[in-house]
Length: 75
Image (tube, rainbow, N blue to C red; front, side, top):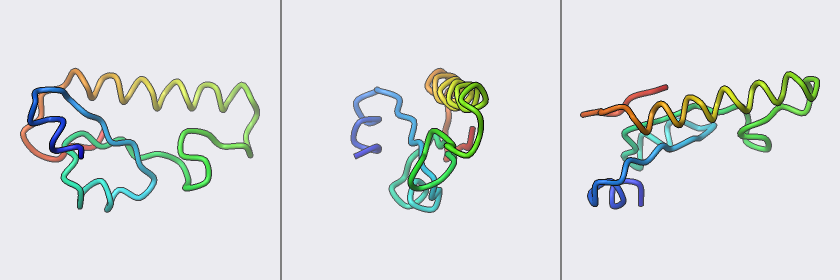
């Protein structure tokens, strides 16, 4: 699905804990995340630190959207 959306000129970021899946589906912009049960969070850290972690992941994804890529890239 990622490749099909990008064929229409819409950039896509694939955020995944298992980056081999991102690679196998052909995602060009990949943001590795934390863990399968909590991809964009970590309940073992303080709420303040978790908020910062989430902001960092989303910031990376937004920056990846604005980056031209010709091949699979990790952010």
